Image (cartoon, rainbow, N blue to C red; front, side, top):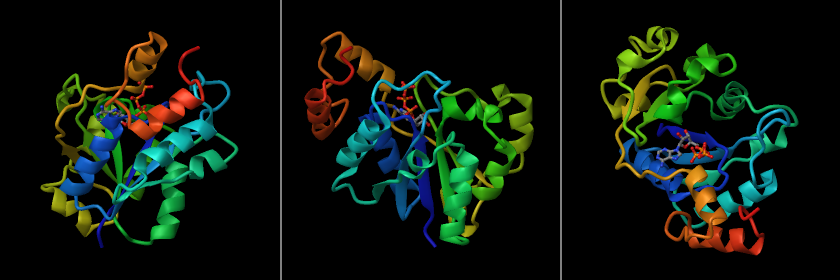
Length: 214
Ligand code: ATP
């Protein structure tokens, strides 16, 4: 069975770094689909500039017509905080033994031990670590608890991920796109162009709703 990929994030807003990463990984791993999952941000955390409904709307516009990319709004529908472990548990219940690949940027991966019940993530999904500029911390620099947890889990090939439901770790090289939502928001705030950093459909939405200009 072809694996399903999950890319979680704040998506404030979704940009072409997210979209290209999802497409590159869809193709490299022959995924059936990549689900983009916008996070509910709990009230005690720094709030995204756009509302949850706006972040979701921009994601839907961005993936429209893109084969294999879909938006999954389950974290926004839950009232409490979004824990990835809960999202994966819900997906696992729906998908049976189909391989599940959790896509995380290298920046997010090095902080994995701070995630709620992080050790359980390996029982629910494979982890696909996406390179993101500035270039990756080598494995020796991972926090010791994470290094121990991933030792022995490294997959020999991308194809190996299709052979089991969960438990492997794969590092996927991507053509680097040094784009972040922080940079997109800063450019908009400064009145600079963000064309070709976000989709035209998102840019129209941002303009229509006067987002990220303060
Ligand atoms: P912000 O600048 O607001 O922190 P962001 O651009 O990092 O946002 P997120 O929504 O936090 O976007 O990212 C979701 C996921 O996508 C994370 O795993 C992140 O590492 C990854 N990601 C974001 N931008 C890129 C990129 N340019 N290349 C590869 N992965 C990316």
